[in-house]
Image 1 (cartoon, rainbow, N blue to C red):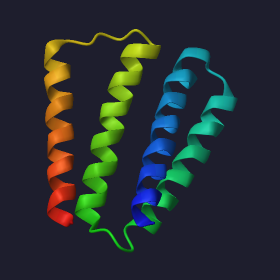
Image 2: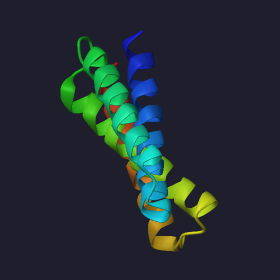
Image 3: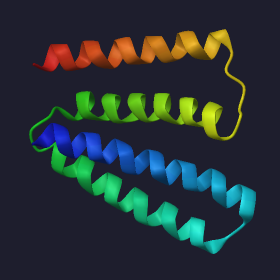
Image 4: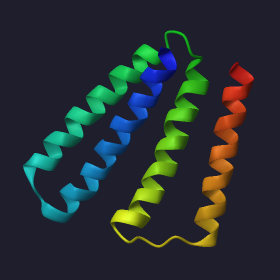
Length: 105
């Protein structure tokens, strides 16, 4: 169950970060409020996850997969540049977080 909390925390963190981009584009208070709400939910879920998952493992997975998701969504949604260097970095982040999870088993 704690891994589900962590997964949901990642989703809400990504949603909050996407709202940050929308805030900078539209200057709307709606998006700023959404950022706050999504980050509160994300941190709360990660807090539940670390009751059973090592904090270092949970944080690395949360930050790593959040970074990968935001990089890919920035490329797909906002048409940001996807260089070969970014692509290789994404692969390395995924490999590192998988290794952490396997070490936690």
